[in-house]
Length: 210
Image (cartoon, rainbow, N blue to C red; front, top):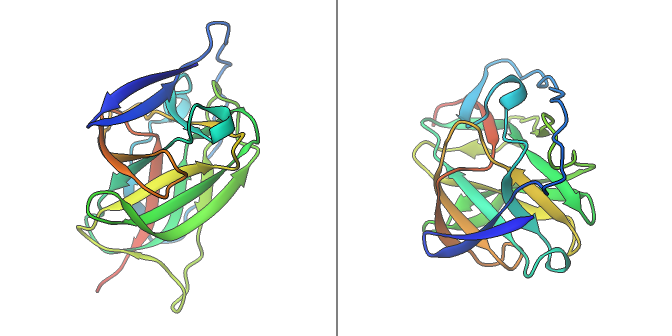
């Protein structure tokens, strides 16, 4: 079921299991190999069967699945310049069309701005299960790559596959929070929010020089 709360002046929602839901034993999926030289830019993932919180998370939903469209964005700031090579995120499925669009965006005065990268996923694991991540892998070349710059804020957020999609961005298990944002119109506009707990994700890159 979905419950509402107010964070930083914005109305947001989180999802918890139905009373009858039984969370299955965790089936941990090994992470895919990383390119040579890749390091963590940001991560709030746990380890093993606690890589993310299977039992609760942020609601990501279309208009037909919720009272209004809903998306939450989480931000991170690289400590150095990196060429982006991979993003992992914990998205799970509740009802409607099973799919999500993962978006990486630049900052626009404290909210998500121009889209830098996006990828789509289908057949998300069921909400309440652990531990399958959605992985976006990039293969950078000299002429075609994405550079994330030190000290600049970037934003990650999912959008539902369509108006019927009801998804969850599962909470991290490392008690990480920070600057976030909420959209009720499929990412067209955003309201800043401070989150006590982020959705679970990580970002990898290869260090570079300016």
